[in-house]
Image 1 (spheres, rainbow, N blue to C red):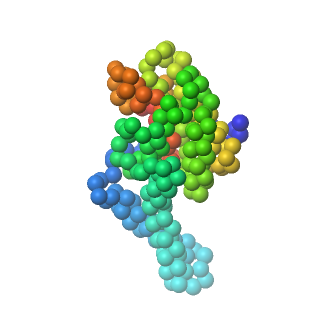
Image 2: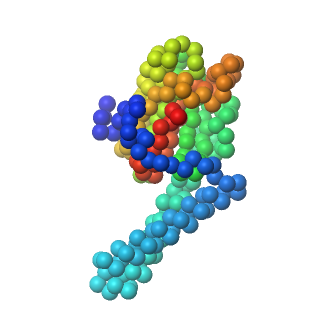
Image 3: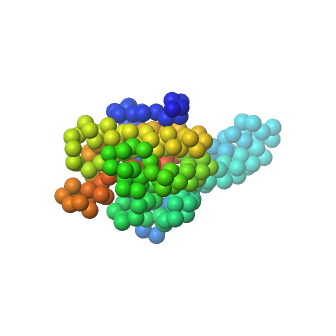
Length: 234
């Protein structure tokens, strides 16, 4: 395993270092537009400063820097939305507004991250951490899209509450690590964090067979920068 690419974390301070806004996007795409606008403004300011510092003609340098910075900043703002759409298309699904779905693959766009959820029934045989052929094919498609972006990747494994906590913690971590390794095998160079959550974060109460099936999953989170990464088990 390429240790420089995959970083296995359990209670890492790195995961907890970034404070993040978990508010859901507003209906109608307002949040995505606001992110784009904010990125453009920040980019313009930084670009203008850079233009002044490097340009012989400070006025002209500031104008060029502001234009380039605004374009780059806007790109940061909307790249997560574009990435979500590309991932959904590559995985033959759509961007959803809910984690609860009968679909084997769910792509959701949150305020500052994209999440791809794979149901364990499609990903692994019972008690196994080896991805199925179907899972490997989907991970390969996903890795191709992610590689186009400078996203920081976080992979979290989740189980239902059958069996001991420690057994499920080990299984969830091995499954998350296995998905990470599959991405690396596809040539993906993005920074990856891996986390096993056992049954700490169920989507639904573990009271029915259907609910348990929803809770057995692997989640892939895509962030713009490492300091945005938060603990996926909380």
